[in-house]
Length: 106
Image 1 (cartoon, one colour):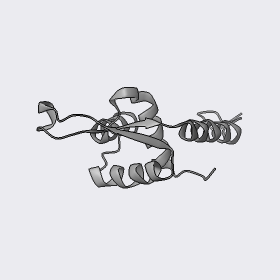
Image 2 (tube, rainbow, N blue to C red):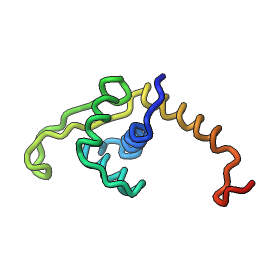
Image 3 (cartoon, rainbow, N blue to C red):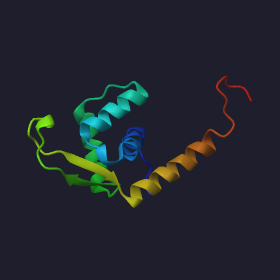
């Protein structure tokens, strides 16, 4: 399993939390809401599509809807490999942060 970048990790976590409502705009908005970072569509789209090609997420295309200007929407869902990758990353984070306190003292 390859190591994920922080942005890839945030994207996968967004897809996880958004469940059936995970598409490009909602993923970007979720990241902004939780990190304060306002990212462009392209900044999200490129790694999201790479994660799809690598098998971390799957997609489904919804029928065109009026709320998105009559365009089809590509929804993303975590695959088993994506979920396993997040679980692995969480274990690494937990091990690396094991004795850290907010004040920097033990």
